[in-house]
Image (cartoon, rainbow, N blue to C red; front, side, top):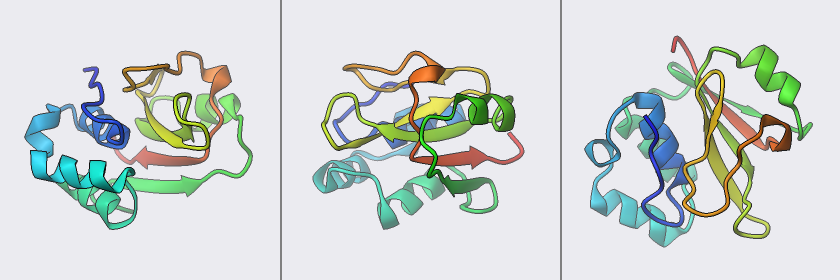
Length: 134
């Protein structure tokens, strides 16, 4: 299931919908999406709320890892192969911004409606959320 962004700042929500294999609108109300859009980013308490709304529990069904080594296609191939994950990467559309893409366990799906990531070799990781037992 491919889920595209509805707004400028909801890439993480689209990725969560793909991870949950549920329709975006079933998980996230218009009011919640507006809150994310007003903040211009899904982070902090908004991020934690989004994770819960999607049916995941932080540190139980989804774990986060800060990545400090950047371009790491080998990491994805070796550690994440077969496991769903959300990858935080530099935005291709907003200079200095971050973006979330979905890793299916074998391929990248970018929820952006603008420039998108297609190739694993172009991914520079900033942060990774791994879905446990998926």
